[in-house]
Structure formats: structure tokens, C-alpha cells
Length: 202
Image (cartoon, rainbow, N blue to C red; front, side, top):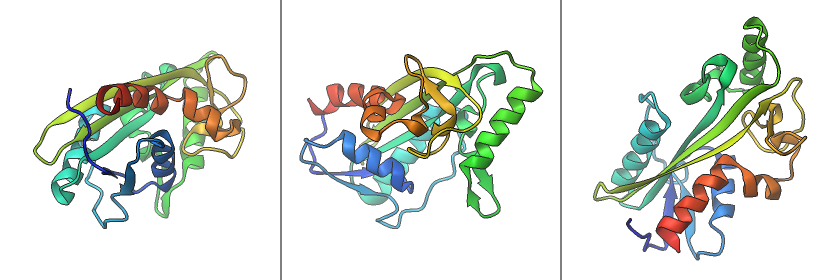
């Protein structure tokens, strides 16, 4: 496994919430974290049908364009009663003519579960795939998962994305109600990051 030996890590995202979350997870390693947005890099179209495929696409595009070691994450919620949907289309369900609106996405998730007549609990998993790519084309892949259940109505205004409708296993509050420090310890992204840090940073 290749070690990270730089001082600056490019995070291949235009999502400020995700950049902040990743920055907090890497605190203590003396690394400066910059976003693709801050460097004016375009967001590549996510044309793959898997989290790994999309994360690789984004990480390698950023590494090639910047010459920096780049980290990309592709993550989403997979609802069992919807046969794993929205899955890799998690962000697509939030697309509107005026940009992404995750309230729209959460309402769609609820409507589809109701239409399917799915019995509760509506079990689901948040999944995260991290890919660290080097400018020479090498990459390392790490996957994390947080099992739980979808609930309705939405609860809480913390976090981002589908957090207000997801209760992680072992808890009775949604990610949207959870203090960010707690979420960052137990989330799917934290699970993947523990593996990344063990593999590339320690």
C-alpha cells in the first residue's frame, strides 16, 4: 500500500460540507486540504454505475489536472426496500432546475417507500468509497458502511444530504439531529477514513 508523503491533499469535491467533514477527519496529520472548487477544477460527469467507479473517475481527473495527490469520495444511501436505490444516484435524486435540493430527494425516497408498500423498519445503509489517486495513475481504495434505517418525517437540521431521514444502528436520533463530532466518529465516511488513515497515513 502506498503512503501519503505530501503536505497538501486535494479533495475532489465542490461540496463545502464534505470538504469540512474530510478536513476534520484529517486533523492532526499536518496536511493542508484544498478543494477542487477552490482550484477552479471542473466536476467530471459521474458516468460509472458503482461508487468505486465514480470515486476513481473523480480522483484521477483531479490528480491529472492538478499534479497533486487527490482524494475523492463517492457515497450514498442504499435503501433495502428500494432494491438499493438511490445508491449511486443519491445526489441525482436531489437535482432540480435550480440546483440540488435534498429535501426533494428525501421526499422522493419517502414517496417511493410508501408506493412500494414497504413494511417498517425501512432498513438502509450509508456507503462511502474513498479513492486516493496519485498523478502517476496509482490509487488506493477504501470502503465504509453505516447500517441503519430511513424514518419519516425529516428530523434535525445538522449534517447534509439525507441525514435528516437516517437513524444509524444503535441510536434513536437521525444524523440530522446528531452533533457533528458524534456523527464524524460513527459515519460511513468515518469507517472508510479509519481504513484510509491506517493504510496511507500511519
